[in-house]
Length: 210
Image (cartoon, rainbow, N blue to C red):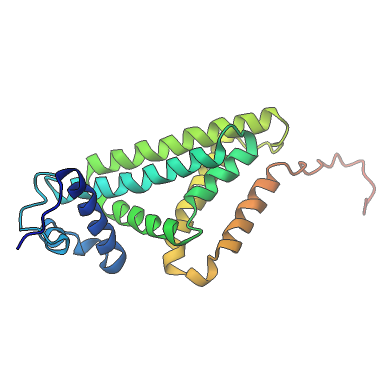
């Protein structure tokens, strides 16, 4: 007999099931028929909520994104500069089971979005949101003298984003090498180097060995 669930709860339950399938079996396991069956619903019960697998995957991804944004907002609060950058990055990085699961959902969405322009745009928009936050905090850090390297802010933002995306994949492929301690250490070294003094430029007048 099909499961009876209140309509406001059914959409979230379907996303719950999608997350579990992604973690346990990967993207290929996510079909509307399979999600309905695992949720205990009759075949076709997903359609009123998600018209396609792409729509379902987008909802699954947006939940991961929204949870990260909510955590970051609480952690960052009114903080600025490098402290704000560090706190935002730590909420994106897969440091615990909750964020590792979110990372797995994100990775599945990347796979589904390749060759799917609408999904790819969703990805670009969400990444741009993080990029804008990082750029704003970085500008604050440079103004406060926390960042002294000559590297452009845009390049630093790219490096941070790509590092975090890499960690989201690495935590599943190489879990022993991506412990929470090592992830934090990598981030802290990166941020410390932003305030490192620029190397002296030799003019040719310095004595050898100076």
